[in-house]
Image (cartoon, rainbow, N blue to C red; front, top):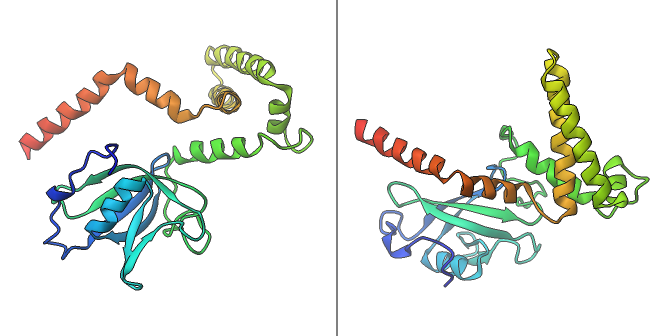
Length: 223
């Protein structure tokens, strides 16, 4: 069993759920709910061992690892439980569509979270990496190489700064959007992701995390 998951299966209330734990799976980058399923103790142990979401099929009466046939695995990043310890939340990195219908999520009509677009943009940028430069502007940027992309980011940063001192909010927002897009391309060219930047910010601002913890404790005491 891997040590990557800070969860003690023995601490869960298996008796309350008759040995079948409800499981919600979310995309760890976008927060989108991907699917709902069940785990028995063996399925949870298998998930923690493989790092791939493994469930218990009530129809087939057996364990099944998501993607065992399609190769559309759910690589688990974290496993947490709710306050009653009778439901699990998995944050996962999906490979391909999660739903058997070929959609990203089994809850296909759920509202899109605002920041989820950045993950979609990042995936689109990545898909252009090895395309012909005639196919798109992004592919042309990749074809021109990192020095040219870096120069473009610098140009967009200057344009953003200049727009910031004007009274044209539309122009300013547009320049910020251009800067964010080209920065995303540069990250991809360097084989890095927006999540790497977020992790860096989290490390630098650990005091913010501590503030949220203290705020949660204070709120709990007033309930």
